Length: 298
Image (cartoon, rainbow, N blue to C red; front, top):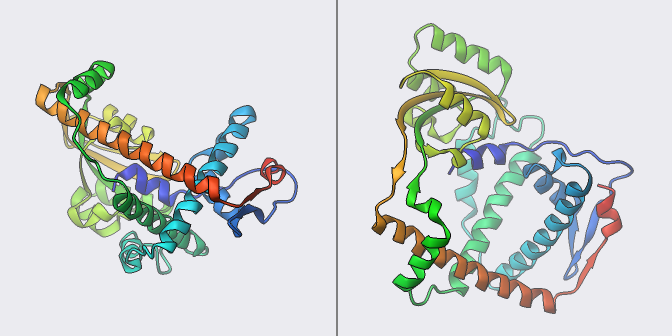
């Protein structure tokens, strides 16, 4: 799992809004779409920081997306698509989500929401895999046309090889900082204190591009000293210690590798187009009742 995905999953911020908060925003085939569902996703994707027209547009787009998601999950239930729940519970335990020191201590709903979200996504992915076949691979001319429209693919961006220690509180940050200053190896500190699943590997995250980590983390890592240097940074999702073990400046991408990326991108576009058409058919036959006035009050 990407670090940014992990940190975003752990970051459930509060949402502002005036007036009483409605409990239900509508119904999708007689199944409630609750305010809790909406606000969880709204905060997870940074909606709480938006204002004015951007906030209003984002709320409407998110509501439409959640309606589509509920329709897909209803179809999953109809087809009896049920991923193994234990997989996601074990993943949450690995993140330290349980017990008196867990990141959800005092509010177990956070762990349940993250677990449910991961389970829902897996069910929809399984539905998509069953419903949509890739068919014939794109022709070489089609891939070349795609590369001409996406010249950035022909140049690899810079990458950093990172190790991380993700902590849950300011007090834990102080403990780890003192340990590192006292000579404790970064790998050992990660195994002992990090809340991330990479802790077992000494915090080894591997090579990452700028778009694969939170911007604050990337900036701190880029600004750190030579390989082996350690930096501490406060992200919106908690304190993180980062060590840079290697730097790759990027450069030209071999043509064969670029074509393979084009092939995957074109295949993904086909799957998304097929999924959009499938959802449109579900919407056409659905019974929807949405309260846009309630949405505006959030």
